[in-house]
Image (cartoon, rainbow, N blue to C red; front, side):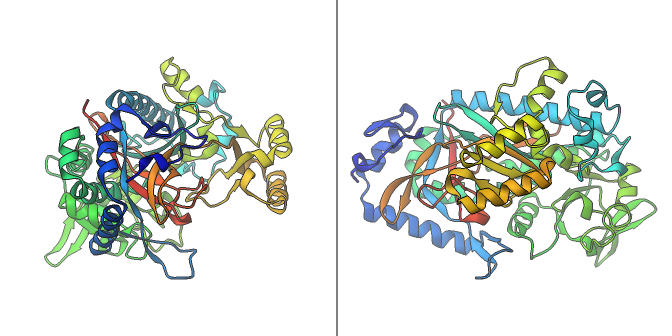
Length: 475
């Protein structure tokens, strides 16, 4: 294949410094790519697609009228990250997760951070995700955010920036694991030669963490799913199978005497730990949303009594808010007396008058986001939007400024991607996964999400994005 035809453009490219000049950690892959015909690449891509279908690697899109079940397209060209670069990301993510955990515990207990006016009190206490039933709680082992998927992007300056903290029910880790198996088969010799760090032990590490947060020696663990129609049901069933634990939904569970039991063919069996994949407020209709058909009546009382551990802990969603995100650098300094190792994307809070005026005057240049939206919804990309859309979002901001933040339009780095037109650059982000149990551990791999549409900056699977395998090198 003639790789000289690849155009780097004005973006930071993960593989090429400029046309024809490859980065050092991509050198071996570049040599292989140069020797591989376009026909062979198309064949590899076709095989990857068929394998995904066979594995059932699907997700559901509720807003799509053309059928709910889709395959998350896996591009055949991996993203490769050098060890030194990964160590920097790892240190920054550990710092951030530790502080977010401290913050969540503080706001449900002593509230020192609010008394010291590090973050506005009304922003936290007025959030719909600040759950009053959690006030005064200390979760098992003092850990609130056990599983985190943090989104990062790399700008033209070559630096990584934190884009979002996903602390509720972060998804996508099953695609990271399955994608590795598919891509490893496509490049078996190269994979071993490069020394790629493994991710396959994630289910073992996840189970170990879930067992750690129980006070029992041999706890019974389950994955709590909303059911087969949930967008990430493939992942729920996959992780339960890989860990060798029960996959349960609300109707499988009952509470008695402030304990939670599974209904089995042999009768009731107590369950000690739940990895919940349903939102906080749907967990218990007696405590939170009375209309919830997904949760377990009485489970929150069992949780408060210390008879069941839940990951992530109820109440973590308050730190997932995009407005709270803007204050995380201050929180790192407050709790640790340190500067952030990984910086935030500069953020304008529409709740603040000066920021709001700037956003309204420069909306054509900015990305505007709803503070509680996810999946690429409730978002405006100023440079890619029409005057009508700009006007609509101006009115939304004026009517409810607290609900919106804005950020500069980052370019997002590109990675060579196999398309119908051959090798082309597509924008990517990076979602590493962090487990917080006995220690904080960053899994040495990630879900790289890729915007498959030419020029698009939206990588969300629900908005037409795909994925890449992410190789972190030992050396």
